[in-house]
Amino acid sequence: MKKRYILFAIGLLLSCRDRVDDRNKATADTMVITSSRPSVRQRNELTDSILAQIKNYYIGQFDQKTRLTEEITDSTIEWSFSSLPLNKGDYDGVLLSVYVPTAKNMRGVLEGDMNRDGRSDLVVSVHTEGGGGGGNMYWDDHFLFIGAEQNGYKLTDIKSDGEINGCGGGYLYPEKIEHGIIYGRADCYADEDGHCCPSLHYAVQIIYRNGELVRLYKQPITH
Image 1 (cartoon, rainbow, N blue to C red):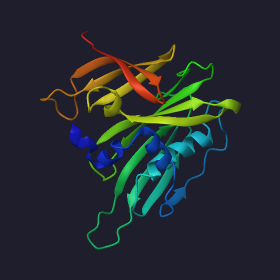
Image 2: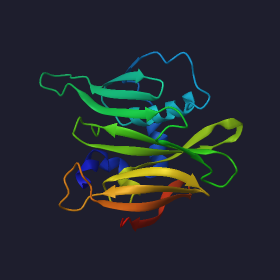
Image 3: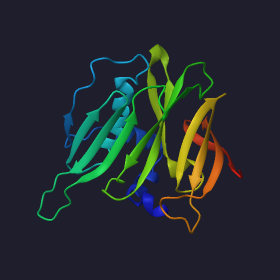
Image 4: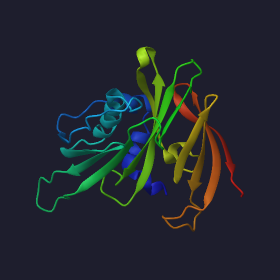
């Protein structure tokens, strides 16, 4: 499953802090087509600041000119990054699709105190498809937002499934935050598994340490 991360191999060599800083810089060559947001916003909806930080992370992955389209519903934002062919025969299609949950009570958004400072923090799991090159691959990126003063949130770390689940591939499903610990499940691949069906399942615990998400515990689920 290591081939799932070839497109991001260079990025994985950088520190998490550098990745967050660099990819929060939107590229001027990206064109954005934005649909209108529903007129009624819910109190528990993720803030525009949080959504902008997530969007800029993905924009920063594309060096070439790219078309970005945005579809918004009451519960999800979909960003699709498509190529803009310069020459005949160049790939013309979607490079990466990103699906962002937009409310705190939705699956994919956990709220709790990760750094034990008494403020609410957020873990937002964003589903991606295409791998940045239009391939048949998918995984979740997990964004950690640490609560700051005046009810703001700062993007502190980003880990993909395979970076944090202890398998080097497969998937991570965070389930809850209690006492500064993320409890969840990892689904991983045995050598003979097909792409559809990882057969190894683990209970995992993840903590916040020295500015990043760190796996604390991984134990096979036997039942």
